[in-house]
Length: 268
Image: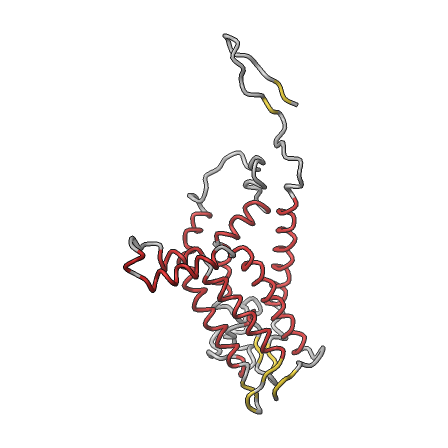
């Protein structure tokens, strides 16, 4: 319902709209999908991380990324590529060194900020829909001020991507020599997608070319900047794809470790 008023002199004022939004489409659907999708993934990942089992396939040297690098005393010796130096307390995950850093990278990611700000915090839930909060301070106060640490979390994610790549390479070495199976394809696919997502980060784009005043004087950096810029345009899609590849990789390795079925082998 709208009403209009007239100023002294006959000039019409803006209509006083009582409805919170005039949008008639299903503006709430993307936020709902985000809540369901992220909620399901976080639930699955949390259960798997604290399951403390079914993360290593000794026959094919497969290690799930959820447990990489495996550094607690509870780890199977062959799965601990960087040593076992943390106690085996239940509350400590096997990948205690990397999980907090990966969470920091994802949590402060520019796309994920938009996703959970809109879906979980309703700030705002959609374009042309009012904010669910009475006040707005942006990312200038605790705890959101820590979102500015995203640029530093990128370096950690970059190193962790190298570790995941190393795991994928080691998976070609089996107790009987070189081997290649479906698990290797899944691990490689996951690593490729993780690199694409990591390099598509806005911080990475800024590090490569954000401070250059003259691209013509830095042709190599400009070339890399254009590649990262193309990836950056797909940052949202890559963020969701990597959630899928991580879950798929972990589930496949868990299934093999639990002897639900055997790996499809092509060589050895």
